[in-house]
Structure formats: C-alpha cells, structure tokens
Image (cartoon, rainbow, N blue to C red; front, top):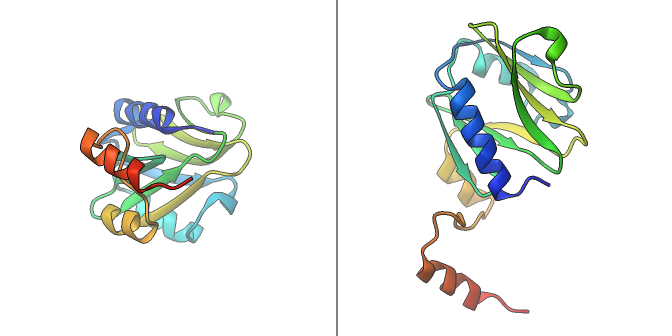
Amino acid sequence: MPELPEVETFKRYLDKTSLKQLIKKVIVTDNRILKIDESYLKASLKDKRFESSIRHGKYLFVSLNPRYLIMHFGMTGDLEYYNKKEDQPKFSKVIFQFNNDFNLAYISTRMFGKLDIVDSVEEFIKIKKIGLDAYKMSIEEFKEAVQKRTA
C-alpha cells in the first residue's frame, strides 16, 4: 500500500509533470474507482488546470480552483506521465489528456484507489475525521496524540 512517503512522491511527481497544464480531455477506463458520477468528473476537469497540490496523510488533493480532485491510491495506486498511446500503463483507470499531447494516468491495479471531487480540503478532513499530518505535526502534537492512545 502506498504509505505517506510514497504519496508525497506522487505529489512531487504530479507537481513536476502536470501542474498548470490545460486538461483537454478526461478518459475513464474503469469508473468503479470513482466516488462521483463520471460525467461530473469530466465536466469538472475539462478545460481546467491542476493549479497546485496538497498532500494530507495518504490523500493527494489537486486544486482545480475552486474545487479539489482527491486522489487516494489504495494498495497499488500510482501516477504515470506519458506521451504516446502505446505507452499507456496497463492498469490506467483515469487518463488526463493535456493540451501538450502528454497524459497523466491514474493507475489502480487492484481497484482500491479512489477519485473524488470536493469543495474544501479542510471540510473533507473534518468529515472523514482524518488526524494531523505526520509531516506537519510538531513534537508536542505528536506527544499529545500518543498519550491519548490506549492499547
């Protein structure tokens, strides 16, 4: 399962390859990984740009301004940036086609990954009761969190 360090790597990869590029088309090859309607996903992303990204725990939030695309990678998720159709990764579930004719594939081999769109990262974190991000936690916050735990 991609753990927090791997998701941070995915974030940096997305930032390096895909930020600020105009999305001309979204291709969904398997909609079982979608937490939203396929047509809503496509309409929400067409002619938008990935403006920035935020990683919180194992979630990657990609700003579409004003909404956010959520990527959760499940056990076998990955991202791959490629150019030619014949280079499309085998287990691509969603493909973001950019104006420069490159693509970003969201890959989920075992179908545990999920994509969603939300209005607010903070509200999503609150509703899902996701704790503090381990990379952003101070030593005091870490001690407090550990002391609250029971065996």
